[in-house]
Image (cartoon, rainbow, N blue to C red; front, side, top):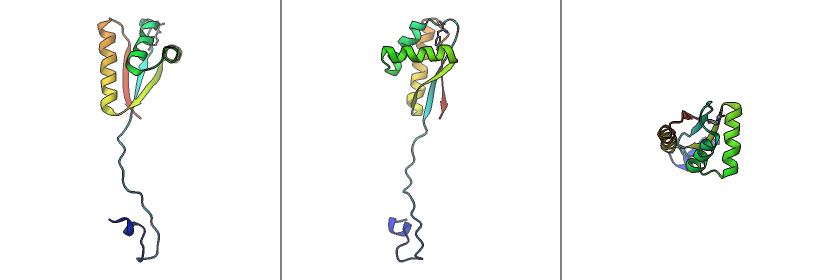
Length: 106
Ligand code: TYC
């Protein structure tokens, strides 16, 4: 369908302007969950290392998770979110901390 058709020029005279269909990829929230055992400094380090937060941003976000139980640490495409979750889970497991990281569709 041409753009001219969309606007009904010289057709019925009824303007029915449509947007060209541009499909945005779905986005995924990456969340970290609180637990009683993972050291605060470890969570801060994870947030700096895998999510590019400054030390003070990471500290604030860690405290939010500590107090509220969960927080969104970033929003990404499926592939990037999946990679980040895998990196965090692997890093936590290698250090024998129970830190949990998950993703959910926005
Ligand atoms: N609650 C943990 C503690 O008191 C710290 C912590 C914060 C753990 C955030 C996980 O996602 C987390 N040591």
